[in-house]
Length: 571
Image (cartoon, rainbow, N blue to C red; front, top):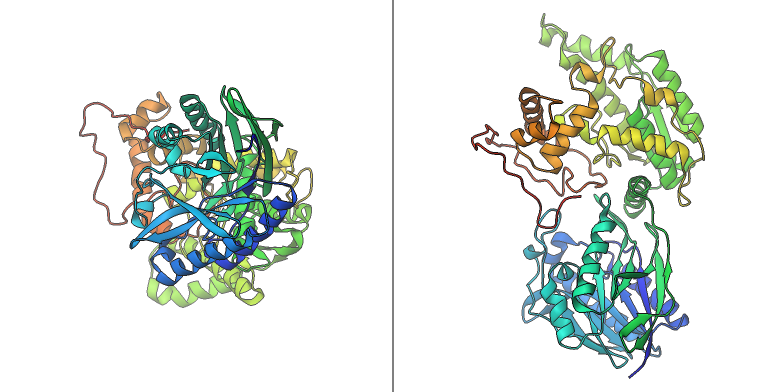
């Protein structure tokens, strides 16, 4: 039995489904950890398959390949003194489990299975996995180690069972996606378990983008007394090494080292950049293209793209029509020059006029309406998709969450695209982040320092410029009001009455009902929208699944508002 342990937490960026690639990364990390004298090496949840593999888990060959990869990895531990804990999938007795395999001396020496399967918000593990019985600790280097898997630590009885059966250290692999201020929730959760069980708990999270989700890393360890003793970086891969010694009071960290995390203001920017970068790279693209209108949304997406993959790989097009202002032309060019991207101006005037002329016999004498505006937007979409096809660049779309909520977007027009880094960002958050980026540049961002989005772009009234003197507020309430209503209806799932009450007189029921109606009827558009980075607790798409054909309307049939919170609380 040893009195000292050197524990390595592998905060890495696996790719869903890329079993061979993840296995190679695991083997390289094993060699690195062995070279640094690690006794225990922990990988993040479902590392070999990537988190989360969704319906790949219904493919028997995928399961067989993953299990074979786990055996292959175990053989790689031969000749090392490292005991590696590898999370993966495992089939036993015809049942599939979210598992970890303990690998040492060239073999799998133990398996442990996840008990508590999340089945809310973005998680639906009960679709695939069996719920395990309460698991026992494993013995590593003579020390009893408990391995609760992710959701397990949300349920006190799981950790209590491990400690009651001898565990003296808890090692928890996670696949915990980012949303605003998520780390505070994690700290409280782990601190509570440590206080209850009086043993250290090391929390390992993966890093990287996977479709809508971004994993922010930020792995850490807390020992009894609530002391944060180790902390990894936010949004960056890292092997976090820590040394532990047995004392009269239990195991304690002998070399505390805490890396400062991204601030609450910085984290959304880094999440969007990382999500975009990984979506581009993991899907085999080298470059992106987008329409640069001179407005705030396209400007911030362009800046994120440059930060993610570099200016040489970003192509912006201004697509003017008769309603495009000189101010917008100047702002778009200025933004492109500040970012250093390729910038082209391609007029849509002639094809729009040709389309209107050809359609005139069909339209007859009907007055102009949204139809003519949508033709402009859809013509821009045609041009951008053509550039995407011809040059092989991923088309980015640039609609914010406020617009997507109320359908203020043209399907098959400005909604065209393969990815949207600001899809889950309310309009006022866009302004806040633009101001933040003008004053800061994270070290892993590739764009220029200083002013990248001019004050004129930030200050001018937002407009789609699809008719003379148009502004967004012709159709929508002011964005501060709209965003507050949407937070209530979407992110907090409040009733109309509760949203009105929460507004404390800033808006009336008629306005909230109008926004609710727009929210409901725009569901079909959102269902066809590009994926985008999730940065809030409740995002459109993966975490919010409303029916398109939906007869329910909030008619205030209940006398008193009913407040509701998610079982894990709301940040």
